[in-house]
Image (cartoon, rainbow, N blue to C red; front, side, top):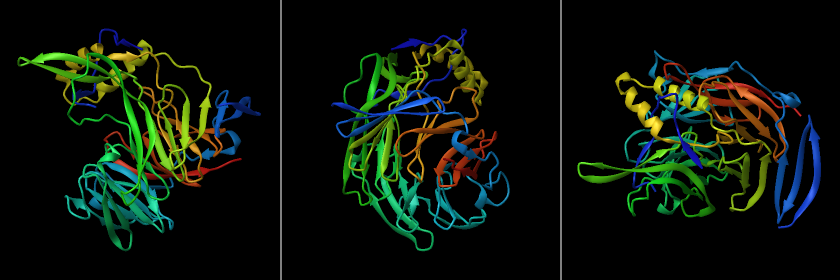
Length: 418
């Protein structure tokens, strides 16, 4: 299942959590494109789309521009253009751009040319105030849905009308900080991560694969849909004695698996990342499609572990703690194989984007794009330093973070081919 990590005598940091974590197949026939064979089968109403490999980069005439057509943000100057942790962003129907900024606790609206227009919100717990802000998407005519996971609260804003109201999330929705996109009717999907709520018996020392549940909650907070329980985060529990008391803690496995999910439009894409397989659900919780690529698992090597260690050491601000980090790294187990992919995304046209697993040292982010039926179409890469926020018909909205950890919001032109 896993092995202990030894990295040329060096080790690195690890995540610490308190012990309180908590049919019949009918062939539809193969299709071939650029040497890839795709087989569609049906199992009790669920379409299974299985492909033999990946398309070439830029196949079918798709192009993602490497130079942004718009960049919002600055290191110095007007504070209205300074970001302190962009959590999300969306483009409105008229081209305006809404950005949620965690550091300022604000939702900021910019004109299509990047000029600041207005801002909403501040730090606090009252109506229109936030402790953690993330714009989830748009409902109706440019009404923005804002999640405050720390306060378990969903707010609605309109660029002209301002604050429209808020809803408290029910406890049954699980951990509100772990949100995974939004359906077009405003229902937000929650699930994944690690539940840190205290209670229960301390786990036994050793390996555990946690279980993650995924739910959607309607915009009024009244309706909850359960999508199922899935293999969750891989952890390794250890027990130590501190001041005469026994303490149990968990480390995340190096290259350990954890589920990835993203809702958009009328679909939820979800995968455990054990293999290249994504399950697609509709808002009612029904599984409608399984998308697979037959790619072999990639074994974790000493080179992978060395790269991971060096990446973590490079982020240290205090070099004096490096020896302890190295020791902890050696004592933390590693998964046998790399996760099959990194992130999932659903674009405005219902296409599924699957990001390649991001190895230490890799800067460029490469995605495989599947059409609405699950067939692989092409592969595209974003310039280094970017993270996707929204994918429209002819653009990719991304957060760019420079070497000084300064955030910018940028738009890259997207040309869809055949």
